Length: 386
Ligand SMILES: *Cc1c(COP(=O)(O)O)cnc(C)c1O
Image (cartoon, rainbow, N blue to C red; front, side):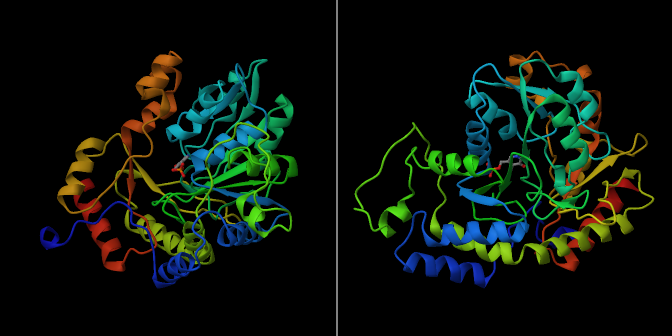
């Protein structure tokens, strides 16, 4: 009896005893702000990605994207290409720096940035491109590199969904982009409640991000107390920000990171069950990564066929009535008042995203889902779309 069962939320974090113990230990250690756990989290993260990269933790991906663009010298009047199919954070950080996002359409199957649309958007002011690995399906790194090289652009990847993801044989975060930014927001593939990580191979960028995440101070607080130099001494070299991650959050992140592959495999297994069970329904199922790559399965997004018995909004309501929470990722940027009005954006300039938005729906896919909950989603989707 569906009606008597508890409502299944669209997303829940997967926090176990180990995370709780790590946070408690961190709190008992007396070090609450950025300290040894944060430093350890950064080491673990760089190691996890396997490349010769530096990882700098921050208190959100939004902060990380802001710091990455700042460190790369994006400033007033610059243009940065951003896909319309993303969360507003990707574009808002461009505005923080007085630069302008140039919002472009996406691919109809992957929802990832359409590089042909991006090409048409390039002007002499374009400085960077910010691809988003939507749902955890990596943007083709080779095509991206070629595009950036051809137009002499910086690349800052919004990898909020992409831990762990492999595209074109390369793990997202270990490639050659100027910076890659991950999110540890509560619903993301690993979480610290709020948090993020900036990853780069460029030592100067890493150094600048480290400085700017904490007031533009040239040594972090941890060093200050550990250093043999007088502990009161520090130098402010720029008007920085307050974007550092707390140690209890980092302690949670270290445990989550150890479980990241396992949690990803659980989501992949749920996605495989959905794929199997939803064949034959009037739904376009999500694109997969190539056999040799890895999809993070942060989201499982279906698109209603033209001949689906009901529309998207009604489907969301019906599924909720059957006890299944869903969501929509994303309301494209060009349909939000601020972006639409500031940049005079029209639906007809984003035909793919506009069409996809009207018919797409995200189903629950989180690693702590029980088999019975997956069954319930399948059952409800079948009822609504048969
Ligand atoms: C969640 C998300 C962000 C922002 O992450 P925060 O850690 O909440 O700042 C940025 N981009 C995308 C695509 C996201 O999904």
